[in-house]
Length: 130
Ligand SMILES: [Fe+2]
Ligand SMILES: [Fe+2]
Image 1 (cartoon, rainbow, N blue to C red):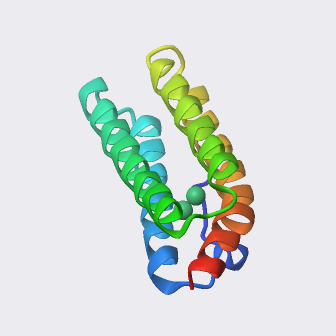
Image 2 (image 1 turned 120 degrees about the horizontal axis):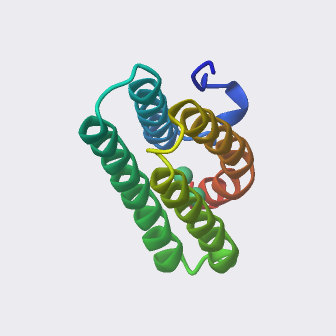
């Protein structure tokens, strides 16, 4: 399973936000490669922990900004964040069972989510926030 490559369509038109998004993509790739390289369970859990915490803080920041701005699509945007966090926890819980499948699911799910979320919810939000 190849890692997630940054694509121009991921850009929300704000360099700082793109940089944060790139860091999230990078953490997904690092975690997937730790799994595929047969790293021990502790190291994999550590990777997932870092990924989950980076994603959670990024979401919290966006939700804070939406609140402060009185953003009209806060609820639907936040629901999409929650969905990803649920999916990520679910993937994390299945890690021990089949490492190859876990890595594949991690990359495929996150890539699909990034592709949709960045160009819809995040592009609209950061376009309004300026
Ligand atoms: Fe978002
Ligand atoms: Fe975002």
